[in-house]
Image (cartoon, rainbow, N blue to C red; front, side, top):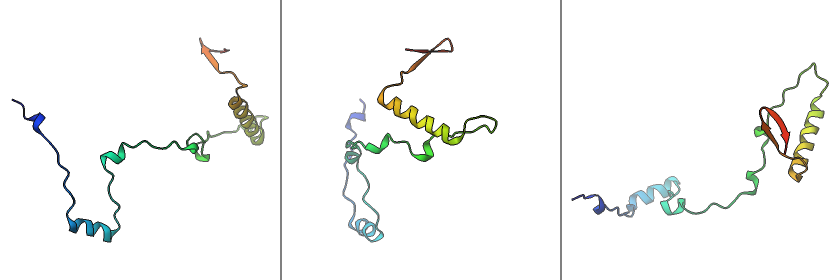
Length: 99
């Protein structure tokens, strides 16, 4: 007969000297399993790209495109894409085709 189903865990209360030590040391209370299961509130700022997460743009000194032009093009493309003016492209046989 297996003893596995008979195993139980009982969470005992912390001893008072440990509670006092944590309080004097300024140690916050640890998270419990129940607190870890709570739903997180959605953060509206998660979708925003931070400056350090932006793609790096490398400019060729021999090209006719300047940095300001490239940044303006990217902003315009992002704006149109956000509004839905730009259709997604599907790549078939390495040839981009508008869907």
